[in-house]
Image 1: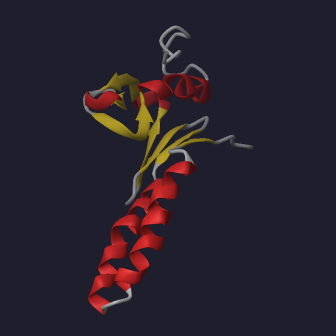
Image 2: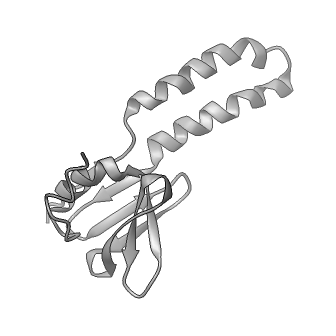
Image 3: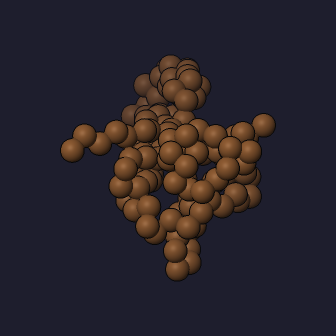
Length: 129
């Protein structure tokens, strides 16, 4: 069975500030061994951007965070929630929600297309304009 996976994640252009921060911090970080800790923050950001996101396939969603992931089958998803800061979450049948990392209201149309309409949003709701 061939499974098509659509990956929704942050644009790779967000890695540029982290790379610039690492390059600029290298002289400071090499001055003393304990100053190597300065490189941890941009390195953590790079790991977060490369790892976190949402994978959509025929079975459901896989929500990937920096540490760990959770698979949510379509049968457990009751809808999409818009939270503070315009971030998106999926409502779980029986209560609760799972935040979709890196997805905002403007990404509703991408999410709708990736899910093939399984989330029950209309095209008007998915325009994100």
